[in-house]
Each structure stands twice: as structure tokens, then as C-alpha cells.
Image (cartoon, rainbow, N blue to C red):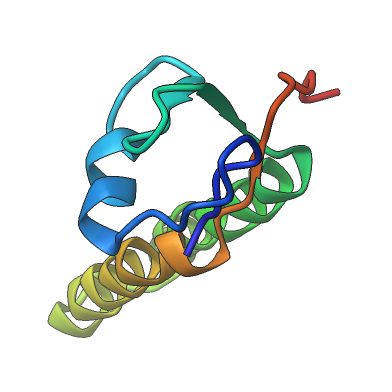
Length: 98
């Protein structure tokens, strides 16, 4: 689970998921209200993992889409969503993605 860089408190799974569903890159710590940012390392990981779903969609160009394709995509997306809080790292400073 992510740990606040300011107060050192761990966030719960529910708090992390709730804070992750915003378009803003800033997240306020639920314990000390300090602004936290997603680390550069976490951004790279999440970007790499999110290329899996479009890859599956591209494979459907060559093969007819089946129920298995849909099941695999739902499975990958749910595993990603459920595991995201466990490998999310926070930073006190906003790191540019490039």
C-alpha cells in the first residue's frame, strides 16, 4: 500500500482506489492532508501494463473476436485495478513523465 512521504502513514486499499479515480495528478493524504504525487516509477509501470488491453484488441483484427477475448480483457482490467494500490508509490514532488 502507498505510504505518505510526509507523515509515513499507509493508505488503505479503499482510500487509494478512491484517490486514484481523479484526473488530477495530486492526491491529498487522508491522514495529514499533505499533497502527494504518483511517482515516476509507478507511472512507467502503469503505462506499460495499460498497453496489454490495446494489444488484445489489435489481435482481434487478425482473429475473430470471441467471448474469450472479452473475458480475458475483463480479467486483465480487474487484476490491474485490484493490484494497483499494492504497487503504487507516492512522492512529495511532482515528477514530469518524460
